[in-house]
Amino acid sequence: MNRAIVPAVSGIVFGAGLALGGMTDPARVRGFLDLFGDWDPTLAFVMGGAVFVMIIAWQIQPRLGRPLFAEGFSLPDRRDLTPQLIGGAALFGVGWGIAGLCPGPGIAALVIEPASAAIFVIAMLAGMAIARIFEGN
Image (cartoon, rainbow, N blue to C red):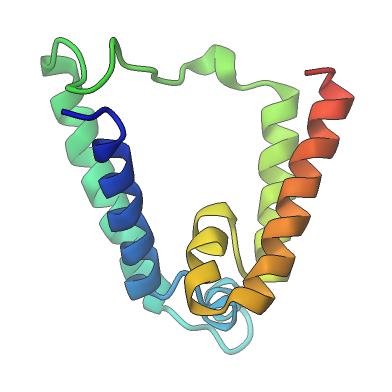
């Protein structure tokens, strides 16, 4: 089996799920984040579905020897909690609240609303490049 097929199909399914769940609509995302204003709870179901799937995955993973399409599992642990990760997570949250998009939905939105999503994706890529410069990678 071609090693690119599984990631490609996974990406297509993930992008379709983001679009169907409303995550590619910045107004809906901002409405979900507006807890004290005109709150839109619909994305709570998307988030709840993701949490439910991960609960099942975390229960199954210890019983597996290795992933089907990789040499081993790459799981986070407490050593992964660095100041850079925490700062990046905070910056991610602020950007998500302002733009109403995050990387996955932003890329998926390129198919639905290319002009406005392209601005976000270009800014995201520029931010990634700037971070690499400062990290020296």
